[in-house]
Image (tube, rainbow, N blue to C red; front, side):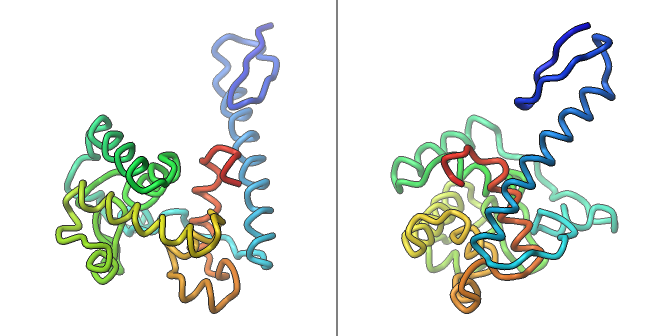
Length: 205
């Protein structure tokens, strides 16, 4: 009998290629992590969210089952994306893990992504927000990541480093977060915050 350790979970593996056991172990680990993060979200928001249909905000992920296609471009080359993340992290003082996970959540690293609400590019900036952040071309990866990181920096400062509130404001707008006095009880927003937090190192929670 072999011993397997995946995602921090160790269990006995009766056969070297027991895929069902591995999948079950991974699912249990992910479920446990999500439950832990959800408790933190509820503690910040003061309310329990209704189940969200999807953690993603862009229509090409939300509605794959309804027939939407992925954006007509490939994800940005990993090295180019990582270089942009590292540069903006150093320039603006936002941790690279946070920038990276926002990009993954918002666009799947596809620079041509456009949401049903009109958000554009890698970090899904609304046109007005892009203009406020000095972004002339939201589909230019360099400008988009710079603008999105600048927005994250502003939100983190506004909410005294509270990552959950900053993410909620990134998704729903700071006006809505301020109005509700915490993470709004919007399924999409609560799912968005929970999903990103679950993928970040513990130092962010």
